[in-house]
Length: 112
Image (tube, rainbow, N blue to C red; front, side):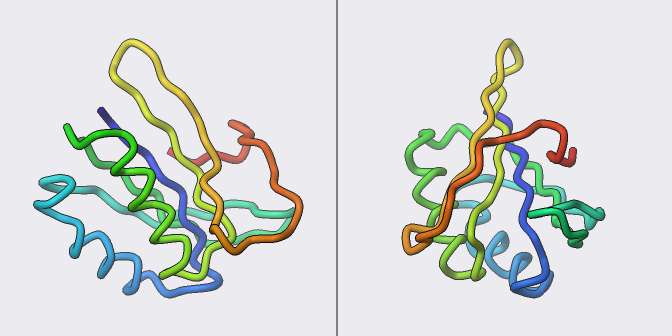
C-alpha cells in the first residue's frame, strides 16, 4: 500500500517529523520521501510536510503509528491518502486528545 501524509509544521519542527520517520523506518517501511509545500489549515497558510512511503504493514498498524505521531508532533490531525494502485481512500487521523470540531477530509486542501 502507498501512503501519502500531510503533516503541518507550525506546531512542530520539520526535524522532529524526520526524526519520527527515521524511527519508523525498517519496522514499518523501508524508505520514504518528504518535501515541504505550502498548505492551508483552518483558513491559514501553513508549511506542510508531504510524506510518501510504501509498506506491506497492516493498515491498522499504520493508523496506530499516525495517531502516535499526532501526539508526538503536537498535531490536531494528520491527513492521509492510502492507495493500492486500483483504489484509494482518504482520511483525517485526529489526535486522541483533540476535543474540537473534527473536519472531514477535503481533497482540495490535500497536497501530493
